[in-house]
Image (cartoon, rainbow, N blue to C red; front, side, top):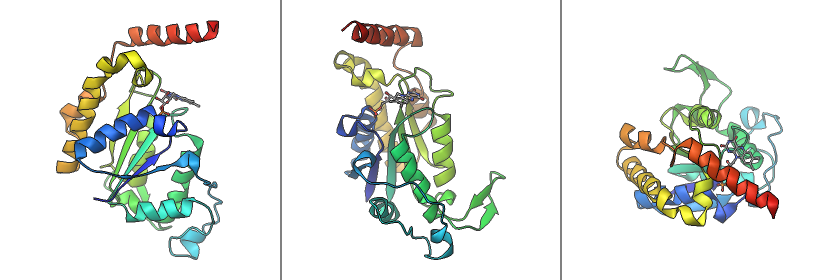
Length: 230
Ligand SMILES: Cc1cc2nc3c(=O)[nH]c(=O)nc-3n(C[C@H](O)[C@H](O)[C@H](O)COP(=O)(O)O)c2cc1C
């Protein structure tokens, strides 16, 4: 399977989110091509609409996004590995998301969800997974923006893993706390490979923070308190 991982974290290979993505791939028993959006020159969309009006779906800009867009076209599965930034995606990654306009057509239709959509990948023909982590302890209300975006851009079957309490993914002494979650992410990968979806039971575990949020807040406040006193 041709799997493309779009790593939207400025932490690149040290990304906490990427730890989850690698566990998911392990569960799928697949390798992937990885790109780091922060290594690339990705210009913002110019809203020229040439991809809609003139070029049959190809962007006219000359930058690194062109080859990434071709990689997305060629991929059997695209995994967006994105830390949540201000309830959305980091700027460089959002720039790439905007550039996927070229996969759509100007013409619209009313979907089964009773919403208007553009013809193109909004119909779910590009298999997509969102894997994201955030530093806040809540899943509800924290990842809604990102999940909404990806599910509307690439269809409602887009699977999403939203990991709250991301600070615990990065600490040396929390490996034992995090391990069961990573095992569940692996299981999600296996389920996705098998049936194209994550089971509700697995999803429920993935939506559960590692530790009670009061404990997490104490942990993080303590950590930042120490940093300030250095
Ligand atoms: C600019 C910025 C904005 C952030 N916004 C959020 C946010 O809205 N919600 C959240 O839970 N965490 C937020 N975070 C924390 C990161 O999402 C979190 O540390 C994440 O686990 C980092 O993953 P990474 O190592 O893959 O980059 C933000 C971090 C930065 C630097």
